[in-house]
Amino acid sequence: QKATMKLTAKQEVILSVLSYSLCSGSLVLINKLTLHYLPFPSLVIAFQLAACIILVYGAKLLGYIDVDPFNWQYVKPYLLYIIFFSCGVYCNMRSLASSNVETVIVFRALAPVIVAFLDAVFLGREWPSQRSWAGLSTLVLGAYMYANEDEKFQTQGYSAYVWPTLYTIVIALEMAYGKSIVKSVPLKTRSGPVIYTNVLGFVPMLLFANVGNEYGKLWDFWWTGSEQRLPPVSVVLLIIGALVGTLIGYSSWWCRSVVSATSFTLIGVVNKCLTILMNVMIWDQHATPGGIFALFICISGGMIYKQAPMRGASSTKTAAGEDNKTDDDETLDLIEKEQTGEESTIVEKEKGDGAAQRRLG
Image: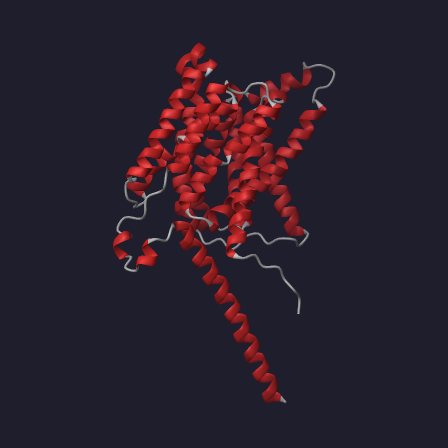
């Protein structure tokens, strides 16, 4: 029999969180560096999406992975998600082009405030608890402290925060709607959400590039530039960004499938610590020490925040042990039950095959 390596539930959670955190933190810095050499945010993202599509279908042709076929029944719910996704990516790139990395991270940390409202009004969850309101208030406090330390805010005022604000609103809508379709769209492979997102998001990125006149700017950049029309370092950054962009597609959907919604929201905020450390080391546009302190206040608020349970869920729990379970515990129990069920099925099948062989003998 062929030996196969199988991760335990906790190992899968740990690996998915680590992979998503590493990819998320790295891609922000890679895109920031890429825009320094190639100031065409929509075209850069379109390149990353196209590269991901080529890599995924290339792996499928070589027989390494399976990919869900396109089904109009599944395309329809993804179209609205793609609108949020495309707008979020575009706003993120425009934010990185006009602000420093810490500004984008702080506004990203404010997303749970909007998500908490959407959860309670549209997704059937309870309103945040006192602990959660304390965490959200800490986020707002940290953002206000950061604004007072930010040079661009002092010189440009609120106009410096137009794109980061739009990014926060769009990413909150994307997260809320993304959580609703994870369970409602029964794709069979992990490549399914990745390929749906990238294929459906490619054309909107080209449209955004047209709106931003990036084709004309690229033409001028290519023909009126210096001797080296495309700096070698920009080519390297494009390749690295394409690879990391593909990996974050897989790691984000993997992480979302094995942890609770609360954990996924907090991971997206807390993993920015890695981005801060890397940014301070390699980039000369990072915030002041006071701004970085305010940033860590925002992140601490994200750690305090806890997503509210589904409305009426607490009244259905009767056992004290169940009351003490967190969302992550329930997720681990579910994964372990699924694994146990699969192992039991294999054992029963082997027993059945053995009995059949004895009867034939």
